[in-house]
Amino acid sequence: MTSYFIVVFSYITTCDAILFNRNSSCENISMEERYLPPASEDYPPSEEEDPDKRPDICLLRPEPGICPETESMTQWFFDSSMGACTTFTYNGCDGNDNRFSSCQECMEQCKSDICAAPNKH
Image (tube, rainbow, N blue to C red; front, side, top):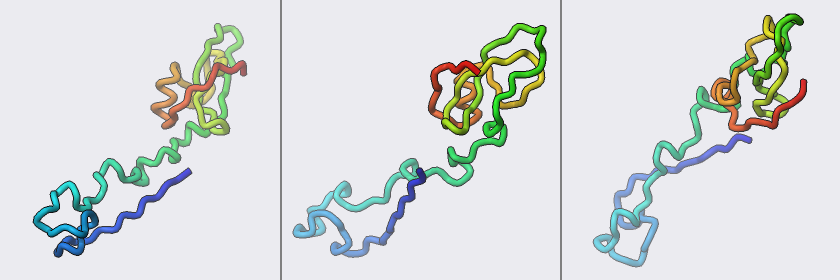
């Protein structure tokens, strides 16, 4: 879900532009009582920081690899249908780049906040 913020700025030139304590004189109003726009960290992320813009590798289906002689191992991948990092069984060679050694690595690469319970793929 995308949220948008609309911020209206006005240049305070008179006592009438002060949003709080309108019945007092200008001299009695402290700086804390005047409207200030939100701090920059309160604005939504710019487009290049949008968490919905995941790298293409995160949209790939997990590929277990084709090496039957190697010992299989549990690896992590980003499941785009769940929007979370989860596990699959990797056979040790080939596969694709949607494969990570830890959930933390998966979350960092694919901009996820969720590690799902391990799956049996």
